[in-house]
Length: 360
Image 1 (cartoon, one colour):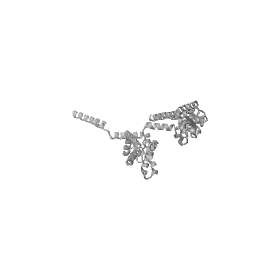
Image 2: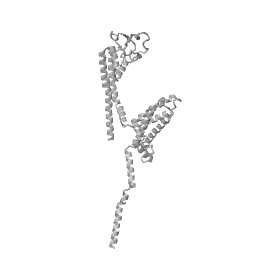
Image 3: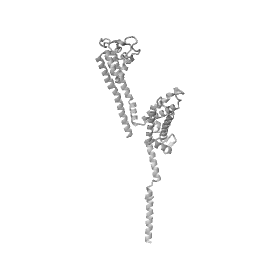
Image 4: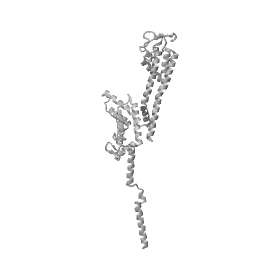
């Protein structure tokens, strides 16, 4: 009796231990419904932290299987890589499409790319929502560019062919907007674009300073070099009527400027002849403010400024021309132009700091 009672107590104690544990050790390692529901709630909370709107298109909640699938596709790193490959491939096809290209396949290729980009847009709208709610697709202004590119691509594809209506072929030029979509895909490029946009107010001030410098040098040039580029050294063989072309800018003596007051300005086999037209078809001169500003702009770009300096030196004096153009290139070509770069660089640093602070 005593042994039986002890066995019954031990058996009751064994049942009591199992009641406290609720399940054996082997079953406790399996995930329960509560744990699965908690993981599902954690995933929903994670999606809410990514600022997905509670409902997409007014009907798809965060727990909707279709929206969950779209979110997983959109958040996959391979999704952005695939879209970037599509954009690059489309840019290559646009670049190699020339007059000799067989255009029979072009509509089919364009239709394939339009469908692919439209599918990308549809997946993002389904995952993020269109407009209503925080984190919706159109709440990010960078996505407006994608919508414009996709919409104009369909418009250009729906336009009649070149042989049917020439007036509508201009719509096909909207295809060149597709490379702009790389701005929304490459973070570094987005920072550069934001830097340039943010620096526009400061660039306006720098442009005003540059305009002031240009006007000052243009007025000085008018006072020093007005009318000094009209005369050229013309060889004797070209002085007979009809020897020179009607457009002096196309002749070999167009930039051979001379000073008519200097008897030794031209070689012995040539003479200094006055022409009504200035060099480079009349564009290079200091006869009026407009042409002077244009000549200064060309010199500041450092493209062909030496030729202009030599022409002015032959027509108005060597040292005066050298000093003028050296000051112009130093002040305008180096100092003022680099102000633009400094402003853009400062704006880039501010944008980079904002990006780091937003990620922190």
